[in-house]
Length: 230
Ligand SMILES: O=C(O)C(=O)C[C@]1(C(=O)O)C=C[C@@H](O)C=C1
Image (cartoon, rainbow, N blue to C red; front, side):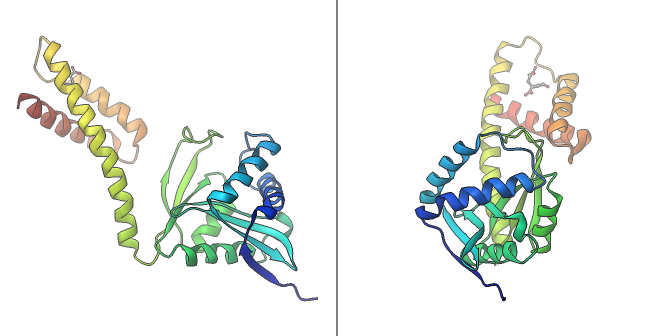
């Protein structure tokens, strides 16, 4: 008997089905265990149904997968293990791409090799790896993106967001450099201290390495000291 896959927006009446797919699929996936009890996850997801866009995939009218997304992030894409490898995930991902033609990001756990391969196969790119300290599971993850119809514009928008934060950080750092100068007796540069700063940064930004970071730190401090003299 042929099977029919349909996609439709989920409603509040689908809350139980969505939570069931989430809990069952997550347990079967190469992901760290969830940190919240099942009941809490269901309640939370029910609330998100009202806030996010959620689409349900059904096979012969039985719910088998769903995608939940915001204007800029794909937060969930889950398919029941019994229906994995049958094009349900691809259909949901194609739908999200159609709904978000300007692109979107998602987080995937580093250990979830099947999901990373699935997204890469569908044209998503890996943007950054984290040590997991910012997620609830404390497990390293990867930010991936589908850069949409204008990838340059999409990536530049992400760069602008980071540069906003960098600008704020530079303003705070410059103010601290100025404050320290007021109470320091020796106003000469301190290469050992600057090396320590670069080494600590290299733990956070290993792709740059200590030598490049030393040059960056040197420039930031030179310009901060100059601004402090204004
Ligand atoms: O830590 C200090 O002693 C500072 O003066 C601050 C600071 C900095 O901005 O980081 C400034 C100049 C020194 O060469 C090293 C560090």
